[in-house]
Length: 123
Image 1 (tube, rainbow, N blue to C red):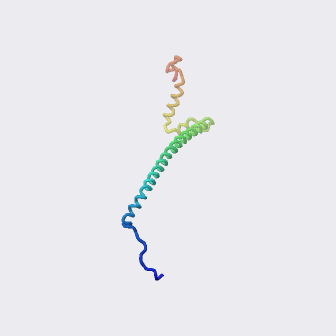
Image 2: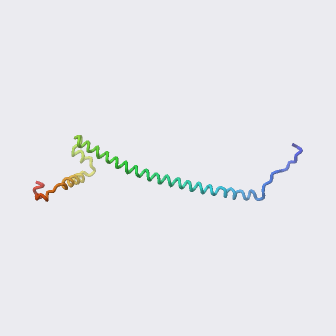
Image 3: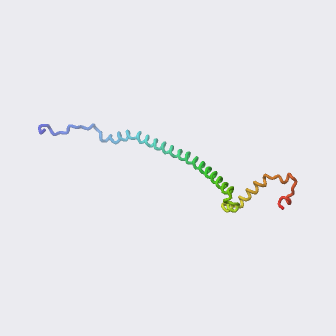
């Protein structure tokens, strides 16, 4: 091995190290743009999916909850566990609830058509 000359047998092309960063960036630029666009598309799909599925479930679950609650309240009233005072105590605005019930019951009556006077209705 000592017979071989000790010189550098490797050569670099001219301006290789000066042009190397530009070549690397040119190769990386399309990949970076592709990753950026695919990330944006994935984020858009996640956001749209979240709003579609979450909104429908929330509306459906609140409707189902209200329906179940109404059925349970009706069951307690019909079975005699709750009376009128209990229901009114549970209401947020009992006066409004009473007004709605009264209006519903009186709207079905045809008092005026039968020729009854208002004094006869209330007394």
